[in-house]
Image (cartoon, rainbow, N blue to C red; front, side):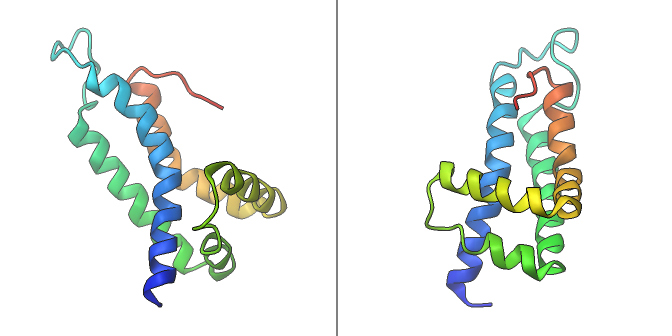
Length: 121
């Protein structure tokens, strides 16, 4: 895989994961260290571990789904809004891939919910 394609794929993957990670990081930054106030396993290290697993799973999934991988590789030069619109359109016509990618991201969503942030649409 050429470096440009690898870089675009990495940036696309990171953009999606970064959005969820940013939502998780807010409560982590305000942790008091008191287990009665802060849920367990909600540290920055916990977040990074979950994020690494999601990143690895997403990478493996994209390598085994060349059509989705190719589509995602075309998004590198677009704005966040354009990426969101195009991804929404693609996933609407590929519900199986949408469900599987949502399943891959689910551990980050679960962590966000457990650590006290509201789920955003």
